[in-house]
Image (cartoon, rainbow, N blue to C red; front, top):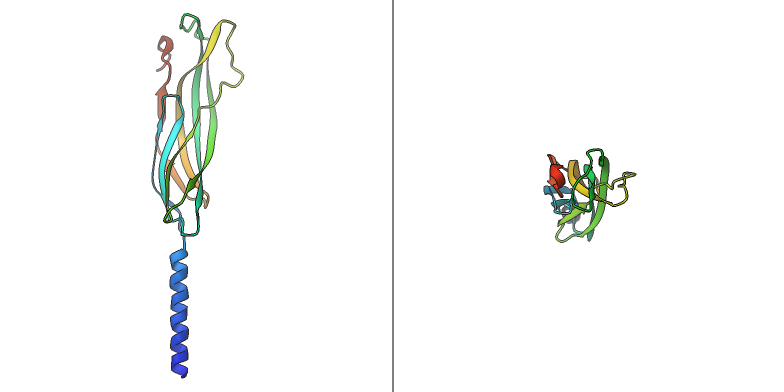
Length: 165
């Protein structure tokens, strides 16, 4: 009887340990990439796994440093003065919620360029985003796991008067 009790206790212990291992989670990004779309927004696409079986939604944050070049354009579509342009550099961030299935999630998240700040155009001219670039691109999951996406992601949006370099 004593051997049976010990064997039963050992079997229950092994069952508990194997069940807890099945529910364990170790969040990590399997893949992550980035690009700039035609409106100047940074778009990061990712796959994250190791989220466990009890999570139904994952929160992902996209962070980057962005530089945007703004210029004033007159009614004829020309950039009248080299002084009428401004580069704004600032951190940008966006957080999104993504559904989790089978302990993993995939998706895309975007963030726009920084605004022009206090830069404005004189009467009769229009403020236009000329180009944008992003560096230090990072995705962060709710548990703190990160994916650093190396490189500089740039795009010319409006090449007025050859302002894109």
